[in-house]
Amino acid sequence: MSFQAYIDNIRTKTGKGPEDFKKLAEKKKFLEKGKLRAGVKAGEIVGWLKEEFDLGHGHAMAIFALFKGTKKPGDK
Image (cartoon, rainbow, N blue to C red):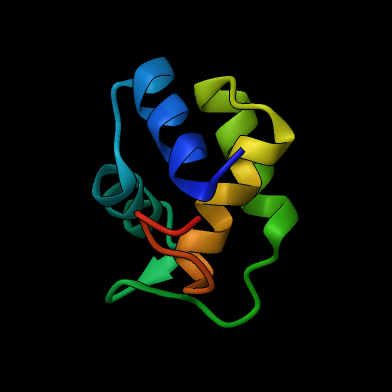
């Protein structure tokens, strides 16, 4: 599955896209000015996304990759 397919599936399931998740993550103090805050671990974000949005591990890691900057929408 391509990275974009993960993002599309997340949007279908939650009604939220990458920018929505970034805004929510800023409120949770995981991000600051759009960047992942120092010391924030993948497990914290994955746990939050699994609990609040019922995402699976792979989909939650896709959102983490967006936050980390290693992937962006449209990537394969």
